[in-house]
Amino acid sequence: MIGIIAAMDMEVEAIEKLSTITKTEQVATCTLHYGTMHGKDIVIAKCGIGKTHAAMATAILCAQHNLEAIINIGTAGGLKDDQQVLDIVISKMVVQADFDLTALDGPDAYGLVYEPDQKLVDVCTTCAKDLGIRYHVGWIASQDLFMSRKEDLDKLMAHFPESACSEMEAGAIAQVAHSFQVPYVIVRALSDVAVHSDNPMEFSEYAPKASAQSARLVETFIERL
Image (cartoon, helix red, strand yellow):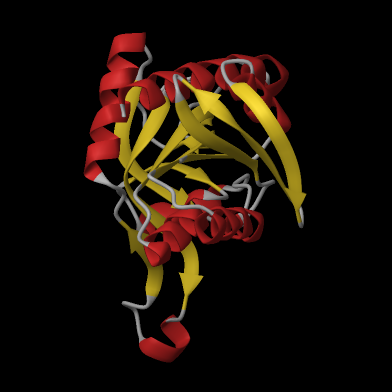
């Protein structure tokens, strides 16, 4: 079985349209949709926004099912000048950028870093190429924070200059999947780019386009696993 995790209803619904759903159940705040895609068993988890919701959904999936892989899709803010809205970032590394134990353990105790499964990263990269989706392979930074202030961006880039995007779920999913030894990959569509002076697309226009694009990527990814 392949686990698919998304934070928002629109993202889940776009994947459902490309799947055959046979059962839906609720576990705590996590909605699980079971079915098949290209003849393979899948479970789609709508986790909600933030690291706690994401960790709970991932733990439920990993504890209840023998998962072959997890793919997590969602939205992030881009952090590099060569990025555009609707580009995707495929995880090279994932960091919990707001994990801070420096007061206890010194300057190295900042951030928790996890490495996704390289085979899954390679499959996602090939799928993006074949679908004509602009992509970047880079670090995904997670914080329970919607970055709206320059000081937030400056702090993140001072600690993790490799970061290609910032969002609110991937670090928790990576930590839980790593703990359960389940291979995973994270993919983020960019709703804006922090280092650009303008945002060419309102979120209401971006969200359905990004959801449909991510669903196509998931479908192609599962077909090729």
